[in-house]
Image (cartoon, rainbow, N blue to C red; front, side, top):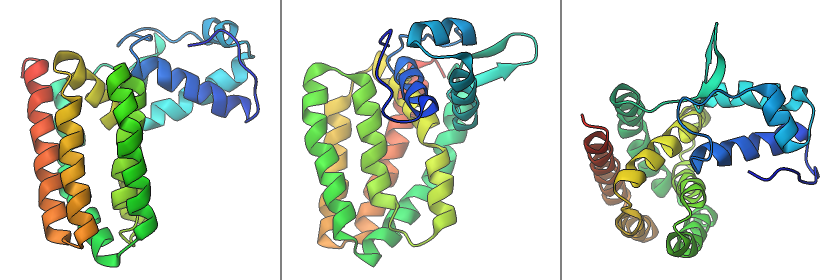
Length: 218
């Protein structure tokens, strides 16, 4: 995380992205206390936007709050990974199936652009960038499903899924495999093969969960 930066957006939004990136790059370690005054000094802002950003990140699952210890970086364990991926396995393939049936070319283009940008991130071994591109790719495929509640529920899992991805990639940096699977899902979607895209995505999610659980000793 940089020590200072300009603030073209709201302070809370910028602080939010800085802390999120710090967590996803492991600069902020699992279980590490997140002290408002220290973060504010480090980022060159007051404590107010830090406090607001931590609340947002708590809701999205990257930060946990304890009555006695305050905020800290979320620790991924097998229970969390299973819970998040269980919901994804149920909702996301169905959302993608519906999106493909509804035909949203602009969303498929965004998914293709995310895959293109991922090539540079893989070469640089930039885990934070890959996590964010992974989020972008998956959302581009499911967001056209026509059910705003389904989209909202999947959106609420994105930070948790990104954090779990980082844990899996630390033990087994399988980025190229992940993006090869992404390409297969996108190819099926572009053909209009809704069932095929959904099944490929279900296998992709399940396989990655297996690798994550293996990496954390489950």
